[in-house]
Image (cartoon, rainbow, N blue to C red; front, side):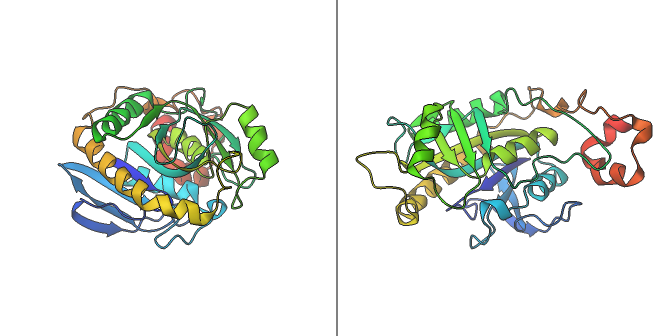
Length: 283
């Protein structure tokens, strides 16, 4: 099953055949909304509005653990994140699509792991994006005719405010490509859940560093969200139609050697809470 997380401006998934809503309960609380399930060209797809339908949740209010756990519970093994981002480089223009492959996590108030409370684990995030899934996503973007930039650094800030000019210039000195408020937390949890993750960052603005462009405002972002959302829907439909039937990466074994806790010391509550994620490694 292919999972899709819709960011700002993308609150639904058009083109789903036999659509239905499904509520998923998790040990970590409620996801952002009900999942919208259906098929595209025979491929099962599960869609979730990251901020809830009607955009009710700030980036720091999103229950990222519940969202990713819910996808796992539904059977999703590949997950595409669609997000509105600001460009930090001249050559990344509004309405371009960037597929970042590295992240800087500048957040301070997030639950970024499923582990703790009785189980310690450390997964590798050296290469946080699934290269196989990103490659298939890149082909779908090219086939759609959108301007593509494959690779780059996504800096994830806490928000909800946009950056100060001093912050924007600091981030640019780090050679980042785009700025957003959500993806770094998701990619961490997706790796722990052994789900392939790829980010489709839709450029809406130049943040506030560009001398010839107005500083980012919600009005400027909204002007481009609808067009970006339409493009995202088309790209996801192409991806779903052409997605390979089997995974060829190592994402599905990310936890194989990551759990350090002595199995005899893991209590029943911790086992029950994480059974979906780690059960096969604890038996």
